[in-house]
Image 1 (tube, rainbow, N blue to C red):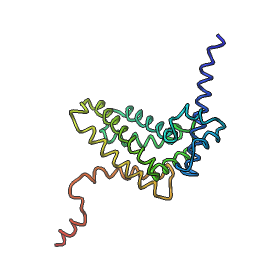
Image 2 (spheres, rainbow, N blue to C red):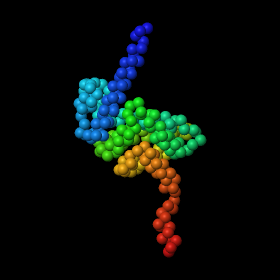
Image 3 (cartoon, rainbow, N blue to C red):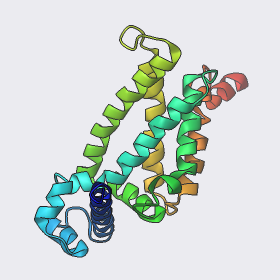
Image 4 (tube, helix red, strand yellow):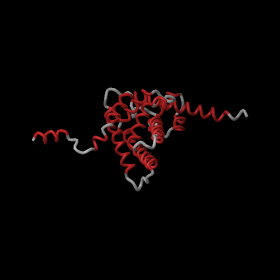
Length: 221
């Protein structure tokens, strides 16, 4: 009977060590730069060995994306929970905004939101991390396409619409991330506002005849 609680305690200790390594890694990455930080420095910051670090992560890259992976998983859950009457793009829009609204609840047990936003900016501005981010995004897009196809009752390989809808959405997210990362305000509120503004333009951008200048010139002539 006395041995039953031990696995739970052991797992909690492992989780604390992993979370501490993530936080130390992200603090170092955002202060010294990703390339300028070594695994030894991360391990030393948590007072563990390099060997311990590699028990939890294959390398720095995995640690860099640990929290982003949490937010992506939460986003997928939010998409699954959207009511069936919403169109695919509306479901994606509402899910991503709710993901920003609930960010603190998703990651607060590991790192503060402010550190996550600095890490997100670092990823956008570091070529090595950005390349990984784009590869990961491609995987996420495929998961989303299958999810949208399932909720719409479609065969994702026979009907192109789920992948097209996700491609449109993902393209907007990509532009939003780029614009946000180069600004002075890297708060959650800032990227949420920018996300809303850009998503609101999807319909108008896909409509015909939005060349206002061309219309004006034609009307004048």
